[in-house]
Length: 401
Image (cartoon, rainbow, N blue to C red):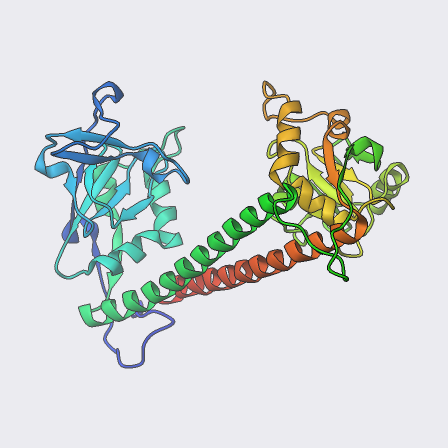
């Protein structure tokens, strides 16, 4: 006789001993689709009696587009207590704590009294559940989950008291992540404001005697340093070797997980251009103009999508990296970017035509150190966010069956 494995999670609060139950969503939930309203019939401003129209646009980060509709049927109205899930396109995205009328791309999920909202929410966002949803939605260009396939999904769940404890614990972790994310946003805003004032010379440092530093100079980048692009040929990657950098490493500020090239390929490229500690890497294709100061003993090569700006005696590379990331230099780049290219890019020679404002070395150092201290705080919060997110991922993996 085959042994039936008990339904219990790996990680559990000690006061709970009962086995979990398993049922299909058909027995525990009821779903209905939303309403499709043509764009021409949507309102762009809220009016008396209108409802916020929840579409896929709502899910896009930093989207400022908002639509409203009037007189939707009761079945397509949701409150913050409801759970919505996209059924087509980016299938499986779970939305809650929002009120309005929802688009046809969404399901509203009504659930049995055997489940609490937050437990069901966390179950739906589990990696295993998301993978199953995507498989059921099909492999077409636009995945589409139908009612019958949704109802086939099975959920394992404990009694309500244990559901509540699990959900409360995970909610506390989410609250911590949200607090850290907000802290990072405030630090980013603070740094942006400080950079605007520093590089516009609205605020200035004084020398050690309390006197003003000399007036700033303005020079083209080509007049103060040399710059190069990376290899134009996609190399043959190896499992172990020399790190090979591209745009995503600079934009993510992550240089530990890379692809690798052989020593032979590296030696050949290194003869043409050598990446050294104190240099700057800047993105020039796609997300143009993101700069990274190389503050470690680097041994690596880089792709054509990056520009290498060499260190020089007339400027601080730490200062120049901060200046490149600031608004004045970003405007210089924007004027020279090839906007009709896809992805957008800037030719290497055009980078050298950009103007740079240069205080004396001592003031450059003061500015760079001040901004780097803020960067360190931002990076510390980022590390906390990453660790807490990893912790949550482990909880989701082990607190459910």
